[in-house]
Length: 459
Image 1 (spheres, rainbow, N blue to C red):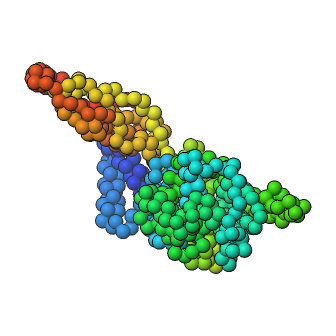
Image 2 (image 1 turned 90 degrees about the vertical axis):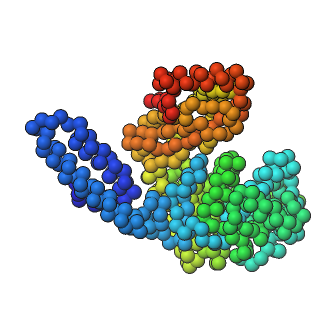
Image 3 (image 1 turned 90 degrees about the horizontal axis):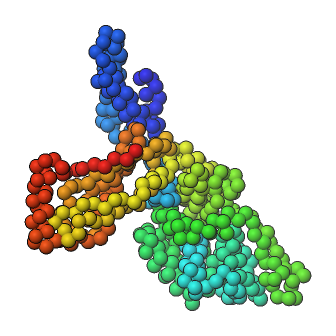
């Protein structure tokens, strides 16, 4: 067994393996009847118990050796920085240099698209509205080396086509046209972009243009993963309508002046995200590249009701760097899906709790945090839960005040605790109500009807 444990030493399951064996040995040692036939089992249990604890002590004595499940030492990547995040819970399950500041390149266009979606949701814009690209957005006026959807003088297109031009063509001209649709200048639009980044809590993310062309745009893998999570929660339809679309043709005959409709110069562009259709579940988001950043990609994929977001920044700028970026993206997604999943407990409504010395006898309770959480893939297949109340609960209470906790666990042990809080204020009762409840509490406590930390179990 020692060799078996040592072989798992640097794997993610080490701690779970140790705990499960300790529990098995504990049950063998304490629960076996003291018969002559069980003495050999007891001796083996004592021996293995000592070995296991010795390994645990060694492991704790050298914390630099221990790699958490999120640590960069688990995977070898070409890229400078990477983060994998549970799209629902925001839990980061893997990282490598997550706070290195790197230009996002064309990933910037996700923020531009986000602001367009917000404008549409507010009713100030429509996907079907027709736009005449302003001179600043024409392809001939973009900086050298720009990705383009080839906007030109005399063209018209819908806002939906402009969004596809950003998502599929990665057109800098499309991003400029979108910025000028929402603001009087690109500079003013970048001010709005930075205000939105600040509202998202992204302290290291800043923008100087709407396309990502400049190396002065900046983000981190951690912050851009959070941007993607907010974007996806706000615009889930964007995956189907834009980011998973594999190709898009522009300009078509209806986009050009009448005299050019016989030969509109249509270009068919395929999505630069080569993992679409190649890696199971991948349906977004976007790639990016400038020499100063290297090759970047923001990915998302869903399997078995778990969705991850992966952000890869700083793959080598050398020839073949895009393939190395894609290898890294596939590697971190496969790693995450093999080890983690999203758990969505079905708890139902909580019963009201008894309030003492209050105007009302009962108050509703709710969770302080979202119920869903991220767990190891092998955990939580059969979920149990307990409600632990800090009784007696005595008024007055403010809404949101903690009165207990919900404990979620499986056969291997506890998985998560979430504070239970009051859903509304609980006002103090009148003099006689408080006096009556005080007498009740005295006798109930005397006869052990109420105790601190009362539990309610559910299996």
